Length: 615
Image 1 (spheres, helix red, strand yellow):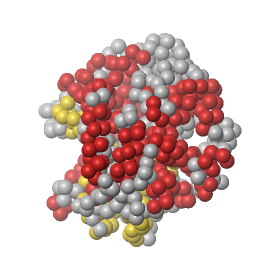
Image 2: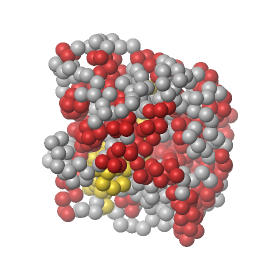
Image 3: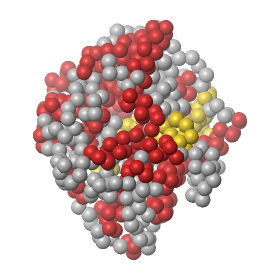
Image 4: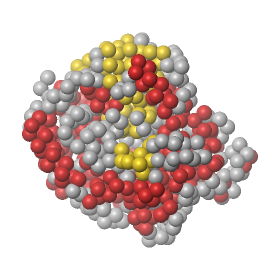
């Protein structure tokens, strides 16, 4: 094999057949798509179709590492999980920064492909080349924290790393997560896919060496880039205050969602901000593998009557603080910390769960539902004791929780709510960067390759703040600008984030000098690599994901935002809204996608060498 950086193997496990085998990395796929989400998409393309039930044994689940994992290149310690989403029915790709990722690669595997379904609960035990399927009956129904501890205690494998599902995944909650070492594959319900396969957990430890083409040159350049990235002031702030460092700014600009998007006024933001979290509860920063930034939070509450651990544990990040804070009208930071802990243990996505609960609160506030509709509860803004109860009900599908577990649109169907008043795209709850504040996020939410709405595949709110990549034509555009330039910026940014998903590199670790990233890749994999490769592979991955989604039934008519998110608000957004007709039209035009069928043009498919994936 020519390419370094890859260890050369995909572990394939068929749970129906109880079979385990290893296949070699396809070098042509690796050259065309690199690793991560790109390689995963190429593997999934022939395995997915409209007839595949997302919660059936025929739906594959793949975990894929990137070619820079284990290298000195900073912020490349993540791994992706991909499948068909049970919440959207489209392609799901979720990213996790757990240290299990490096263990998998050191065990000798670039990825793990799981097919079929077990008849009884099992877990996968990996120790280098030794792979076993073991009975998980004793840990089935356990929370994620207890599951991890139990598996590590077996055989005294303290150095092993674990990923598992909680009760939410077992009960097929449509937005269940896969938790790993207090990180998570959070979005799009991959925990439910794992639960449908009766796969409780995977435990891994690996000791093999990972080889790179020119390690000394790579090390030297990586150090230079690391110093540059850590010299960026925003990264220093993100490290100190976490991803919630901009809460106060977002409150001023209207980017922070408040009371289910009905207002942008939240004067109590200081009570739940990243600065307050750091001042009152931060024990230490948490770092993904080979990440100098450390945006994760390890918090310490001490003795408490909240049912929380009395030692340190994972604290909330921005989306969780916004979701269980301003979105539901709550100003109690400790209550947010508790909600985050409950979600992490039960295995529930914090964005979708907070959003579906906020929707319920909004309906109760408008008197469109009453206590008899929701198990006798009086549900008012900011009442966190009811939130805790609802999270339990969701995870175990009890009472109203059985409806909430299906997502916001199902709640809307139950209570006859207009879909235009529900904050979802493609059935998935939108993240918490209001597109009325940052117009590029309208494109990010409506047309993400990782359906539904995603804030990571086109983080226009960051680029509008100045995080531009001028070497590849990504220049800052004012946040509230309706223009062709905004659409082009988003198109180029989405392609670049598609490229990042192949490495897999966190957005915070990107050097603004993309040519230096390209050179690091060259030193790692051992073949020439330049800016043109960055752009071409990014576009190729983006368009392949587009083709997969069209194959799965994506209809461009559904690539839109609900009216709820396009209603002018007073405050930080100055009653401005994105012109989605203009932005989407220019975005399709730039990408050479047909606005009616959604299909990339024949010329674009040929240019990107995707003919074998076209239909």
